[in-house]
Amino acid sequence: MQTKLLNYYTDEDISVNIEPFGKGVLFHVEISNWKLSVLKRCYVVCARLMEDMAAAGFIKAATITPNPKFAKLFGGTTTHVIVTKEQQRLEVITWELV
Image (tube, rainbow, N blue to C red; front, side):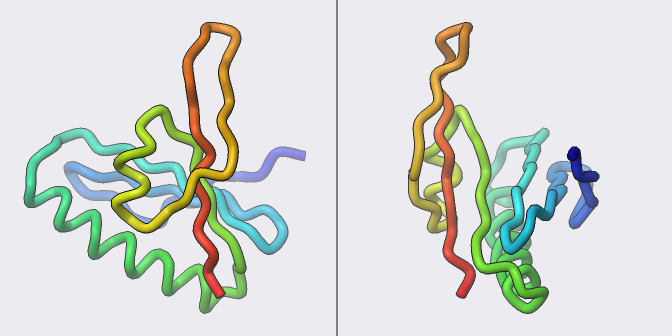
């Protein structure tokens, strides 16, 4: 069963969608313009996102990324590594929300 992406936050530089699954939530984040002010805004959005998801009853959050350094800036931890058929290395980054 495929779930629907829900828009959490969008501006001219950042798009954050969420995909609930049971007691967890997947984050889908796209950054279109990299600069320090956007990174600072990401910190604010991420902090609010984590608080909102915990308040909504989610206990875990995750994202899959080819750029784990970025996700780890926000306190995530690598739990799995995936190598695609095209040999792209992706990491599953998770956060405990409780």
